[in-house]
Length: 411
Image (cartoon, rainbow, N blue to C red):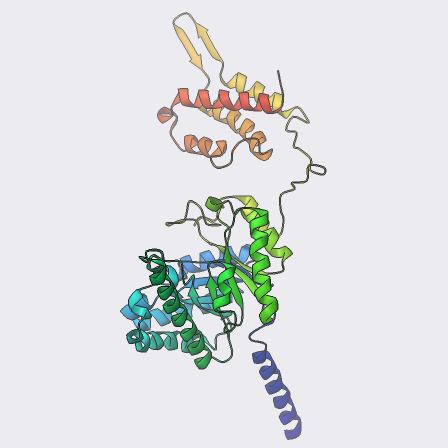
């Protein structure tokens, strides 16, 4: 029995050693991630679990979160406790974490000086020691976008700019080496702004991480081609750790399809709609509704058919429902007029007809969905009948009918 136990323990030990040896991995194409700027730091637990629940429903398996030395310095214990809780909570939802130790966008030039090293290393060690044994830890991102900041952008001349860039890369490489020194198991990366900047860190990181918000198929393909050159040269995997922005002509439908074609892991920016970036980024609103279902479809691997030879255009009047909608609008807007008396249909009747029409138009994508007609209908219905702008509702309902007539070529 003792021999059997020893053999079993030996097998378990060997298995664990092999499991630990799988980090860093050779392939991160399985990563279906999302950036999460709140990162659970100070977020109430019920809200954190709600938001991570949305990520789980979207079949996402990783989050990329921003940390801050400044926040750590204010209350180290609370910071570490919150961070550890976040990673554990995310893992409970089947979601790993890529923590970002430093943010190049908000870099403090003073932190690049040698005098900061003791404080910087103490902060990094506290974070790494807290998480390095957590199964939910996926990769350390040592710095987000090292050169994307005012410190570089406002350099007075090219010579000073080059010196500042060199100082930042020295900082980045120092902390790459330092994280490796105190955590010899988990992978490290640096999320560079453009794949061309991988040349500054490709030799020292385990995973090549770049961002791509470019505007056309050709330009996005160019990003992956550049990243792949470094991947081939250094024999390291690539991930696109920031992508998708409706304000940069980088829609999910295009960006995610190309990413999958190149078998790269990804992190879409960002999980929640709201805050400073809310008008150009975000997947889910706090109430669980979404900005655009096509983004969600792209996350799940379904893309719009743009092949003019195979796509089938919608026909909302195939069974005569457009005729019915127009008749309903006409009936809802009738006025019964007699001497000294005038009777109109209620706004509820007009809104019912408007919704009938709007549902045909929206389902067939015949109206702009940045401001869907059904949103206005919902807002009016939330008002009391006496508070509604009758003329505005009549005009709205009439115009919807005209759009439907035009789209269905009804004369």
